Image (cartoon, rainbow, N blue to C red; front, side):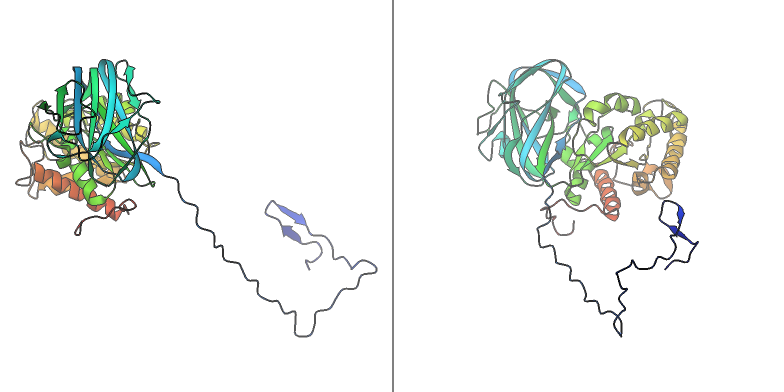
Length: 409
């Protein structure tokens, strides 16, 4: 027993301990048996219930930031779209351009050759209706559609439209077509004209087990500009996605800098659901127009705005062998200073410069990794993707459930 006058710590302050108290009258204190009291071990029953399953959720399997506008008059687009997520249901998001848009019918199917479908088209609805009519710069999300997809499937999304559609600046979706008239339900090749720019369709969400889901923010280097006829599948986000086994969708916009990204962030990035991580590669287009302090301030602002939304990985700026604007000596100086600041400031970085520069000249690309002194070649995009994969794998990123990567990935 506690000695008289000592204190007992209850965790909420110390209080005087009560004095020793004899047993009440009529009660006898039992003495312990010789050899002490034998206590049998308590057996804890094993909980044989199945662990509670995590409900599926929609996360992006495809995305494009559609900054520009294209007007169409009673046409059908059939876009060939790669999807980096597996699941049982899909949901499509469309964006209008700089004017009103009427979308009359949408179908989704597996993509076949030359604009044909490899499966029966499935109708997509919007609040139960076949289509919708909206004003300028509006994002419209479809009802969920039962349509099983596997990681890296190629889908054909066909839609009959009239009006202004949001569109990409460069070609990113070869194998797509446009034709005047209503052909969304046609299973064969619709003919018409080849069309490779991402248009109208902003996002394909796929419902599946929750997983890491990445979005890449950047300029033409991220969007995938290499030549005048490009393919999002060759851009570093898509190449890295194929190796990682998790969605890494592309929100790059050719020509943009920090100002444009911050102005359009809500519609083009923060509108996405289920994103866990963001990779930022921005600043190249600002080197000739912003001083170093301005570059740092806008990067800090962007990362701060992303912080509640995702874990942010910041990329260093690639070598720049020339500049189309401003003083090249200033561009070289500020690029090096910006990269040094990125490495010293952010805990999660992807050092693109380190894997693309020549060992004896930080301003030059390794041979074969560029096309014009500014933009990476196909080989350069692969090297960038390899570095993304290396960093993220070291950080514990694993393929999403059910995804089997090719041997060697």
